[in-house]
Amino acid sequence: MNGVMIHHTVTSGTANTVSICERGYEGLPGPLCHGVIAKDGTVYLVGYGRANHAGRGDGDVLRAVVAERALPKASEADTDGNTHFYGFECENLGNGSDPWPPAQLDAIERATAALCRAHGWSAASVIGHLEWQPGKIDPKGFTMGWLRELVATRLKSKPSDGSSDGDWKGGGSTYVVKNGDTLAGIGRMFSVSWERIAQANKLKAPYVIKPGQKLTVPSKVSGGGYTPPPFPDGLAPGRSSPSAKGLQQGLKDTGWLDPSVPLADNYGPQTQQAVAAFNRKHNLFTAGRPNDPVIGRRGWDLLHRLAYGN
Image: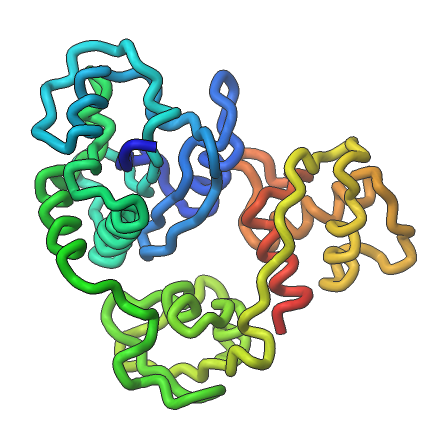
């Protein structure tokens, strides 16, 4: 990989956006990026390896990125960018009027800087889709020069070790919500799933929190450090390989699948019905398909956290 590319999605609704980017659409299979950055600042990992986000762009731009020098104007589409760039799709309509919340812009800056730091790149390795492919306009609503300045400044400082600034009082204590905080961000700060924080504070969808609000943060030693098992690539309705037993057990343990249904390798009708109900409940279905029987990576992780993360 040689750099990081920023896009806007031309979509609305986080669940819908993540679903599209994870699965793709007719004519362009997913994943459509490596990460989706939602308006609340949450970064959803939806792909790894090659992702269909960059398309073909200008080879001169790629050479400039590799050399970390000023970018020429993109005038050709002669080079496959998907093999050279990480891609972040940022939830925004891309019409110039849809706002970019501070939490989202902060997440874009942080995620981009983290990749640059990991590879030893400077901010010159960060580009927008509009700088890569002729005719593209994304991201619209902020300039890439502005973003590169933020990334460059962040790269000059020592990265945080992930600890808080003093509100954390130890296991199972209290955190005071600050401007721009999200449940997901607080959960990452303390290695506790956001679902456990919501449950501990009796928060219901859409899980709104406000600055100054006091939240009980469960101790991570009581299960907050749970990591879901890897998503089985190829898991899909009607298939028997990879086995659907892990999915079925998770559905049983969360009450979505009747315990009397025997575990089986096949991702059959009863499993599909249970997954569709789970997707509807958690707004994980593909847009226009409320009976979507496909479990995606995000749904897989959520199912296992709900079943075994407490």
